[in-house]
Image 1 (spheres, helix red, strand yellow):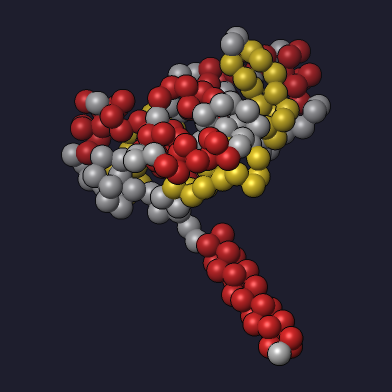
Image 2 (cartoon, rainbow, N blue to C red):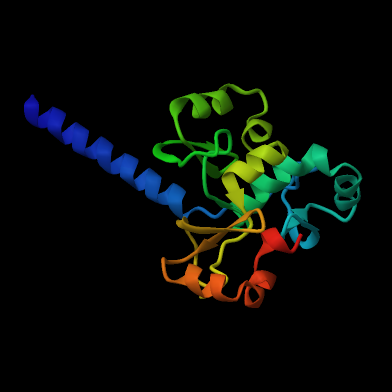
Length: 194
């Protein structure tokens, strides 16, 4: 009997592991922030340092007419396509706890605590709660995904404040090069070229 329980536990664990590996390998499929339909790379609008994709040539007009209405869904799409990077909890601005995250339309969003995670999970519009408004975007996300000095992926713990904006780096060595002559690097920073 114990052998059967152990075997069932092992099989169940293997199935869960296989499912998580398949989910990790699945590619994010961008949805139009206006219609919710599959988005195409051929129909885009520049927005907050990135490009938002739409399903057709009509939706960009609706988006431009009321960007506030569609901003949270556009931000979710940009996060899913790698144009935004999460750097902190969108509700509190505190560091994310790896055990406190949820998936919204195929995009993993992290939170500092169970209270913030719960607030988003209970919300009628999870996208708007997690990504809506300038405060949530400023608290938790950046369009800067590369170090301005090296061009490598950023490490969210390596930062310098510059002109009221947080600048991210790949390592502890790059901030000194940036601070020596910021003008050499500012064109590479989406938060400074809006």
